[in-house]
Image (tube, rainbow, N blue to C red; front, top):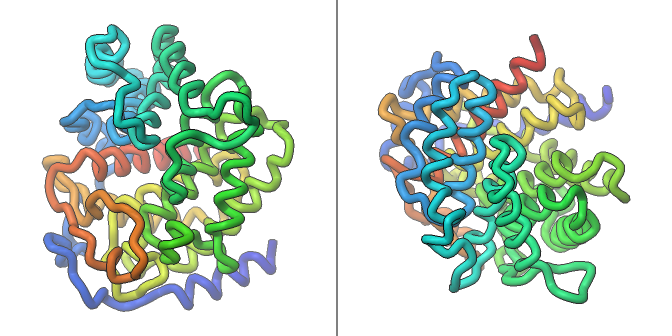
Length: 358
C-alpha cells in the first residue's frame, strides 16, 4: 500500500497542469464561480427538482430517476419519488413503448431505473419491465455478448448497468466477459481507456462510462461471482490513472490526458461518483482517494449554478479518429439533462460516503 501511495503521489504531481489553453464558453473564473459551499444534499435537491426535462427512455433520465429514489431514502422526503413515478408511468402503462426502434443500448439502458424502482420503490411492474429489456439485449443461444453494440466504452455502462441489476446474477458471467473483453481491447497500459479501437483517445466521458460500467457490476452482481478480482483490478488501475490526471481545480478534462483540453463536468461527476462508491465499499483506500474525491466534488459544485443549470458539459459524442474531434466537441452551458443527471449522481454518492464516515 505504501508503494501504491508513492506511485499515486507521483502521478498526482505529474498530472497537475496550468490553465487550459482553450476556455469553454461560460467556464471563466470557475475557481470563484458557483456555490462552493453547497452541500451534496442541497445540490441533489436542486438537480432532482429540475431534471429531467425530457423523460425519454434513455440512460440520461434514468440516472436522475434512480438517484431521485435514493435522495428520497437519504432525506426521508417522499416527494422525491413523485417525479420519477409520474415520468416512468407512460412506459409502465404501455402508452409509450419502452422498447422501440431504432434499438440502441443508450436507450435500452434507461431500463436500469426501472430495476431500481423495483428495488428502491417496491414497484414490481417496473422490475418486470427491466427484466424484459435485459432479455431483449442478450443474444439468444450465446453465453456472452449483447445486441446493438457500438464497440465504444459507452457499451460498458449501457449494458452493464442494466444486466448487472437484473435476475440476482443471471447475467453475471455475460457482464464479466463483456467488461473484461472491452478492457482488454481499450484499457491502455497506463490504466486509462481509449474510447474505441478506431478512436484511440482518452475521451473524458468515455472513461466515465468505462469506470461506471465496472463500478455498477461490482456493486450489483453477487459478491462471490467468479473472477470478480479481474473487475476489481480493472477498476483500481483505472482510478489510479484518473487520479494522476486530476486538474488543479479538481476536475478532469475533455481528453483526460491532454492538458490543453477543457475541464468537463460529466467526466468529473462520473469519476467522483465511482471513486466515492469504491471508498465506501472498501475497493480502494480512503486515505489515498478521499482528498481526490473532495477536490473533484468542489469542481462539480463549481459547475452547478444556483438555478440548476450547469456548465462545461460535452455535447453528445460519437467515436472520432482524431484527438481534435474530441477537443472540438460543442460545450453545453445551461439547462442540460445529461450534465444535471451526472452531477446528481455525484451528489448522492458523496453524501452516501460522508454518512458512512460519520
